Image (cartoon, rainbow, N blue to C red; front, side, top):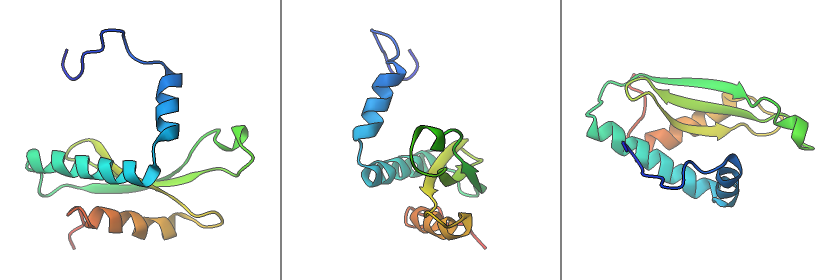
Length: 114
């Protein structure tokens, strides 16, 4: 086994959903960004291209009473990992979420270089 031995097999979709529903989002985001930052350090990636992109989650609004969820994410081309995501504010757009995401990444030493 390369990463993790799962003697009872891969957990079901419902199990993953229950776990993600009970996680505190801000704590998970902080942990995840720290983890990706450590991976970049261990791989000695210094001149990484970080791509910023916005997406609308498909079918999110059909199962809820709310409107569609719009997310902005950062992708590391050097590690092929997502570095983080931020949801846009309701009645807003990607332009307001990008600075929030960049600020989070900058706090972990992943700021874009001019």
